[in-house]
Length: 113
Length: 114
Image (tube, rainbow over all chains, first blue to last red; front, side):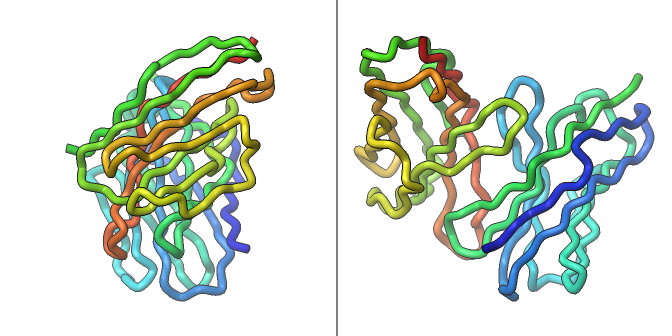
């Protein structure tokens, strides 16, 4: 079975600094998708960024970028110029088929002003 | 428009009550999902509907009964719940195309069973 591991239950960063959240996953498949979701205290789960496994280029969305290492099965999220609004629980997720997202346990990110 | 809406936002019900949660999306997505989320935990998949047919039931107790009246609506009927069923219930939707597997989530319904 596929598993997703986030080894950092909590992280904190100073406002305007850069922070990297770690995620590793286990799969025997070669074609799959990886996501980072953000869930602020207001609770709505928001898609931050996606990565297709067949693409070597790392995905980027404004201040958010990933470091995708397929051989190492690693998918870290880098947040540049951290803002107070980035404070949230971040979940790494994997999907191979159309329907079943496998989530990591989450990393709670705190932004210090 | 990437909006999934859910009603109600909050629900308190007794163990003998019957209530329903509602979810709606107008993105043309053909897959819809129910998740249960406990505090500080990731969402747990409960049910998946694909083209209005139930495709995945993650061994959820029968006191939870899903329904998909049409491609835009998803209901979760609740009956004889237990206090441990208190949680945030999230609805999500996605395309069925390989290029668009990401799921879009609603804001959730906070359920308290007394």
